[in-house]
Length: 248
Image (tube, rainbow, N blue to C red; front, side, top):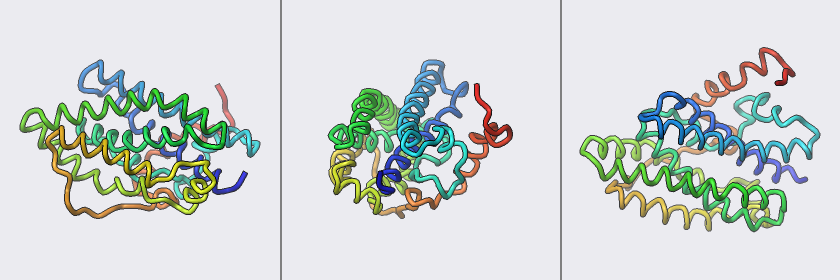
């Protein structure tokens, strides 16, 4: 398997693993029990999909799937900067989730047609869960954005903060371009058109204003991360590093 294909698989897996870890921090802290459980289930969905990608790589490279999330350092992770951002309040988390879900759902839609049968199968299995995730996060953005004065203000503030991480999702790296050319991975301009249509309509329905100008922050997909990823990995990898090669 070409290195570019391995990189694309790692990028998708890392996005899901890091975001799943972030959402897991809400367990026991959700605003109400139903939403606490819902967010924990979404975290499990994301980590489950991430495992499918790590398992695929492990079979190819003769490794243990745990080696990928538990034994790599920050610069080796290829997740976008968006998913490592702090949870903040409920509005911050829902805005971050909505942006990612718009991207994730339409990425999987394109992946269902991948010439790589394993990746296509993972996409077909995961897209139903992704559809629920997108419905959940977009409905919360609309409910809060078009809610009270305070909830609208918090959601607008969340949008202003998270919008800087939107563009990176759709700026292709060399390995994404390679995989798109070989029909392994969808073209990001196609994914972008669909994802932004959904995102823009959601923001409009939520009565939120997308900032006309903002500074796009990129680098995650090539290993350049914010300071937050190191703290996530320190917690996530502690047990494996403290007690190497342990198993349940």
